[in-house]
Length: 152
Image (cartoon, rainbow, N blue to C red):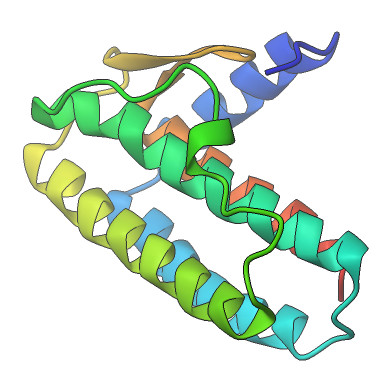
């Protein structure tokens, strides 16, 4: 995962933006992201867009693995590559893969909300540094939005 000069600012942004934000708001945003995904999927199916989709799915699953450590599950791979669907994934499988990953993120977010982790609890992001649990949820939502804006 590449580190960019703006990563400390991004880390600060997601952490500060979620300090007083309730879990329910983050969960709602993740749920709304499915509608945006459906709109993005309705656009042209090109190799460029396929790469965006597989990247987005891989980051979503990788992020879940990082957050799962807060629930006592083992840490996943250091990078997202093992979670990215292969380049030859059929188009008809892309949207269902995303929806499945997003539903798993939402289910995890609900478990994290029940645990009610405070803002002092962090999970390390290889590029951005330590993100709060809610910061990770905003990271997932924001990353997906940015990627789908490239398509829509």
